[in-house]
Length: 390
Image 1 (cartoon, rainbow, N blue to C red):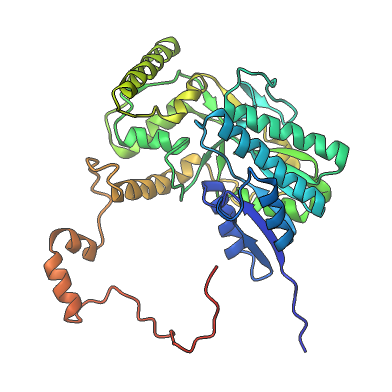
Image 2: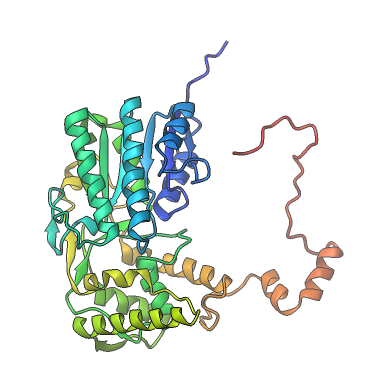
């Protein structure tokens, strides 16, 4: 009798996000049948509830936990504190109890401005920090404390500006791309020479998987997971603008003090509108407006000197830009977010064009059997004994 190989089981929290989704896809599709991944939503396991987290982990008994969950960056202090900090430490306490590795996806928001920022550096924990930065920094400090005093096996992966496909939210780099495509950026909200580091969402799961397989090297460590070369924001905006063939932003640079004045005026206007029953929100990224005018580059030397091998060392935000733009333009147009955007390079498939222009003709072709856009499902049977998908 063949002995059944016991699967390794992992919990990935935040699986609906860009990074979490990439992690779930990697472990489910690229690791064979030896790893089972669970990605509970808030209805199955609330991060704010220690009881929920403990019950879920006690039932499934995972071999590792990865936390990529975050509250929205413009969340109020209570939600940011509860999800980003309390949730992070609830998971860490479970990992400690089960004596399993815990991977925490953190952010460059914990860093000050500057060049070649090292893993050991971070902001001072002060009341004036944004709720997002404060909660991420507190999480990192508590994880380090738990490692030093209780033996927690953890790794922190710090990401900068993340780029990649399959992000359902318009935030971060994708907010910048959307603003240019939507022609909502008339002038440059930055200054010449400002540079930032970028993180490739495709590569993060490979590093996390490698770190899980090499705990002696990665336990208790922080890593800046960024592309080797930082990117000048002005140059990136110009590249996107040229690719899209749009006229804006114009070659005018708005000083930071003027930008802050405009942002504050908009906040006041939104408060006034709220008094008459009109509710609107500012783009969440405007809380980081100062960052558009400040250089922040993360040093990737520690990552480069580790045993992790970059599978695509030549891949950068610029080399991926064409595919990313095409993906998001198609997605946003499907959702009528860019209804007025006109680009001849994005042509519809023939049957989709018929659906738009000649639905009667398309339906007749389908009913007459001249065209079959559906699957045949020839393998389905009422007697099938397979269990339903998770």
